[in-house]
Image (cartoon, rainbow, N blue to C red):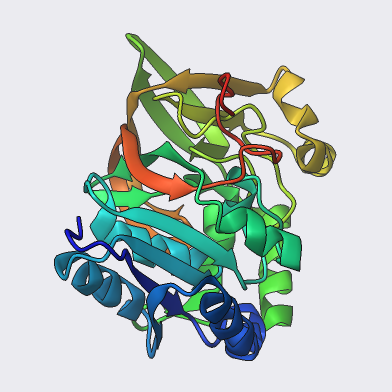
Length: 313
């Protein structure tokens, strides 16, 4: 996008990512940028949504590389104005807690010196994204049990998030015990499916919440979304199946419907919570579709990435 000889870089750092790790990581970022001798602006986010504003501004000003330093939320914000745009390359330096997204790229959750060297090799690949009701996601979206846990962690009025870790754990336990599945109608691939939904994950990536591989066979550049739909379970079945998720073994259970699709529509009889890359929303009807080759992104072709491997990767 930049017509000058020297590429322009922007590093958008979330200082509170990883419970404050982001701000402590800033000197390392500055050192690595200096060592590379690149033309870079390094800026800190100041509030929720600020990374999106900064990313859009850097793109409008012709920056070639826009790099996020933070967690999954930071990266989601940075990519929002760049999806479908040409002439810009996106990158991610992990500094969050879960760092689910970085797994897609074949990069570790914390960089050693060798990982910085790999990053600055600037190997890139085209990556898909997803859209639900006009909202973009990079890793995935979900309805059912996990979305209800997120909803319980919000309080009225205004559905404002509670930050207490122990309260969140309590909401997990309470929801596991008392969650009641709702009837969901899915229309996709020429079929209509009705079931009482315990979990319905639609994903571009594989991992959620740090260790749950709900869609363990997903590839982020195949032009399809992976769907993991789990029907109504009793309490014993819930515990049993959730224990299988960290290894991705749940997809072989007869109560799980696992498939791929480019688009699908979902309908509920009432408004339900759903999360989009960790952000909570509410709706009754859902139009979901893949956005192929939505981003050009830096990755590690020699790493354990979640892209369809070619002769080059």
